[in-house]
Length: 68
Image (spheres, rainbow, N blue to C red):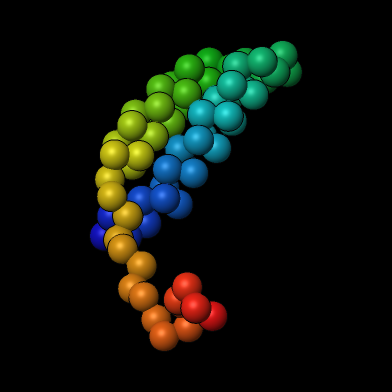
């Protein structure tokens, strides 16, 4: 199941890392700031896992070809 959605989960993990960095830099909410490093690490681990998974191959169709 995860191989089918590996690219989407890889992108989601990058978004999670960016949200963790934004949470680290914001000065308004202490609980958000406290969990920011955990978000960054969780996103980093997820990115490492999902970036190494091969996506399911795209099946060629009649309409995809070099001569069209």
